Image 1 (cartoon, helix red, strand yellow):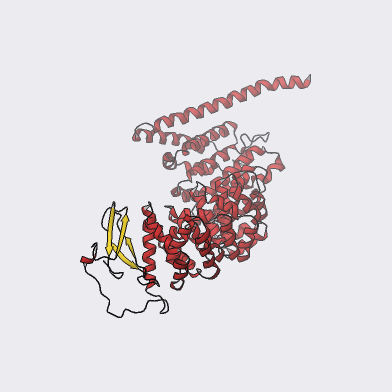
Image 2 (cartoon, rainbow, N blue to C red; image 1 turned 45 degrees about the horizontal axis):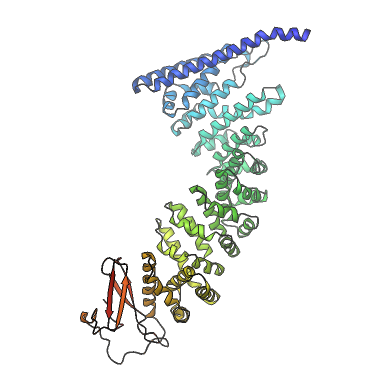
Amino acid sequence: MELKKHQDQRLPERKGQKRKLEEEIEEEQREISAVEEAAAAPYGEARKVILNEVYAQVNILNSTFSWDEAHRATAKRATHVLAELAKNEEVVNLIVEGGAVPALVKHLQVPPSSEIDHDNSKPFEHEVEKGSAFALGLLAVKPEHQQLIVDAGALSHLVSLLKRQRDVHKDGSDSRAVNSVIRRAADAITNLAHENSSIKTRVRMEGGIPPLVELLEFTDTKVQRAAAGALRTLAFKNDENKNQIVECNALPALILMLRSDAAAIHYEAVGVIGNLVHSSPSIKREVLAAGALQPVIGLLSSCCSESQREAALLLGQFAATDSDCKVHIVQRGAVQPLIEMLQSPDVQLREMSAFALGRLAQDTHNQAGIAHNGGLVPLLKLLDSKNGSLQHNAAFSLYGLADNEDNVSDFISVGGVQKLQDGEFSVQATKDCVAKTLKRLEEKIHGRVLNHLLYLMRVAEKAVQRRVALALAHLCSPDDQRAIFINNSGLDLLLGLLGSSSPKQQLDGAIALYRLANKATILSPVDAAPPSPTPQVYLGEQYVNNATLSDVTFLVEGYDSMPTEFACLLPQMHFGQCLMVVTGKRMQGTLKFQISDGRFLS
């Protein structure tokens, strides 16, 4: 009965508190709505309305710095209004102009202890500070305001807020409110330090890194995420910050976070580690020694594309200089998910997977493994990309794969040589890389590689036979021409292309034949025909297209104008065979060419 009576006495009080809270929320919404309506008005009028609202909230903050419950409630509402306004980037400058920064920084602190009521209650504890940190973090999104906020003294107060978690168990504070204020403080530090090297250093000098590292093991996952996000920003291109993060023993907690089921957690963790190891071989070794490799490989199969991208980038960094690590990455199962990522609709994901595969492909056995697992074709397809960086990473990976003799036949049989020759590359470094790849393939066309290619020319599908013949016309040694193009019918394959219904195949065949014609001039004396006993004679135009005087007639179909170039191919092979190559503009209809002498050139 006494308990029920006590509850009945408290019921009106609870209802009164609920009504009061609802009234505060309605008041905030009215103020925010009024400003939003003003923002839609003409610029001059909108500016005036917004500034007046900012001035009003700043005045409230400047006059309510105490533990008085009414002051705390009013200050909380003021920070909330300013934060809501700051979500609109077009209004941020007006908020700063209205003097909000010093007022908000002031309320990052707790009021003086002497202001606490006799019953030691702290109304809205952590709430006002949370609102101030949130608003300042939004203002810091604009780089021009970062230094202003720091100069107002925000960093030391934000670092103090990070340490509030240590007091949760001591004084029985509302852990939810504490979690919120810590998270907002960490987010504010992230925004303040973003791409600002001097502020990153200031955070370290203010002692901000150790509490952030501690928060990586916090029970609240939102706090973990916020702490990792801040450390990620602080570690980027700042060696001193990197070293302190590692010295504070952040690696074990970060590696545990890599295994989290929450995408937001493992995305931030892999980002921190990526920034730590960048351009830092010593930290890279420490990260690997701490056991990061397998969980990073696991993230390649994450449902979060951002985590996949960061993991691929990190594996590329791991593999860049350490030959043993290249092998370990492949052994632990990274190749297949990386190849699957090459076919993702996400351009950045394709780029990072190509980057990682390019580094892994500097090892001989990895080269064979990547091609065997199906990496060759998707890498060749990426050469068609208009993204210069993606194109270059794919070209670099293909350069690595071409180094292994076991890959050369596959490279040629899927049309890789034509892909490299026909590609349009926007960056000179990519053009150089492609040229080196073709040279690397050319150097390997001998011995067992050549024997395998000749075997394919005999038994493979017609399309593969033609690709092999085309590639060999460009890459083979002059000493091997007879074996390839006479003894193994390579010439017939190229001639067959001239009669194709595809203009592209006609052109490819003509260019290949022309290439062979040029190579014919450097045949060895044993292979070359004996010199003519009489001086070489070039016949006149009357011998061309003359049914009486001409010896050979050519019919060329599918062209719409006269060819721009004729060339004689292998003019005196062992049986005196003579062919003509037609290249240049496409023509329509049928042209008839009759020629009297294999040496005629027009």
